[in-house]
Amino acid sequence: MSEKNEVKAATNAITLVLSLNIISFILANMEAFASHTNNRPMRLIFQMFLHIGLSQLIYVIPLIFWAQYKQNWGFLKGILAAAILTILINGSCGFLSFK
Image (cartoon, rainbow, N blue to C red; front, side, top):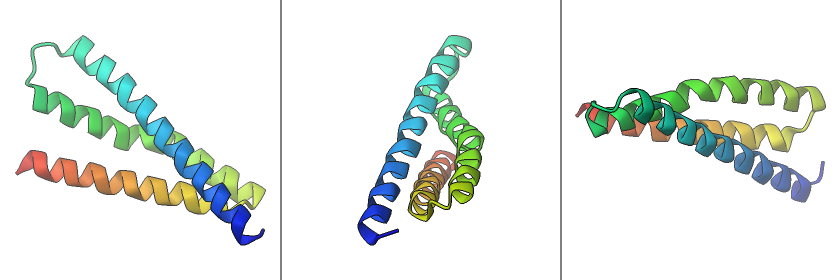
């Protein structure tokens, strides 16, 4: 695969994973506010970010296996980059909420 196509595939993968993260955040937001209306807002935000971290496994692991099966290494690099970025953001938000 040429370098230009690999960068395009990585960009598409990052966009896909970040879009799925946004969808997961919206669904977690709806679920958290529907079922826990009397909790503190910071706790709800923490629960939403925790939900993204755990639910990310549901859609990232199959994407990784699919990209390996298709031998689309640029797409695989983009998936891993977006997943690591999400983990770092979740970790920093979790650290700040426990401080």
